[in-house]
Length: 267
Image (tube, rainbow, N blue to C red):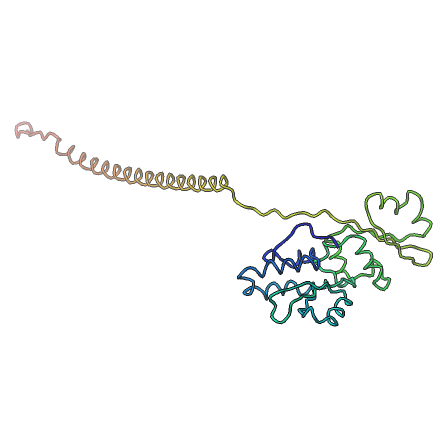
């Protein structure tokens, strides 16, 4: 498996990066973590992450028989003060021995040849005999190609094996009678997920946009209010014009000159 590249703390521990640790790394992490007051409060959380990957046994180092028995089971024993009656801790990283032990959390911490070894040990099923779920897990971290050809064609100079090796693939060959199943694996580049974090400039732009929108809304409201006022004024003017016209009619009648007709004229 790929080794530890950067020291992490207990608070940074996840189900993914726990696989980057070895026994010594974990022991040092526990020593540092226990110096902090919040360790007791968060111990159950830490152990829920650690226990699926590491076996841990507290013991008295003076018990030589028990120490020897644990070391024979591939535990590493470290001094661990302040553990009550115990003064040592034995840590063993669990080995991935079966292809079904692969998970989305640990697959990224394997080398191509290690995955091929697990495939080879899987009852000779080869790549196509693996469950689809396992294939998906492997392909999340590796490029995988599988070819089945006669032995003479597979090993031909400049053939598929030579081309794949030139491209950086590791190869596993499984004999199928006179044919060969060749499984090619190459690690995919790790892509770090970019998380968006607003900067001061983007926040300023956001605030400015908000202000502009507010100003636009206010301007629209003023325009609407102005239009309403203009409409009301126009209506009032129309009503006033109507009244004036009616008054004008009465005034015209009043202004008609009345001509007196003499009786002599009638005759």
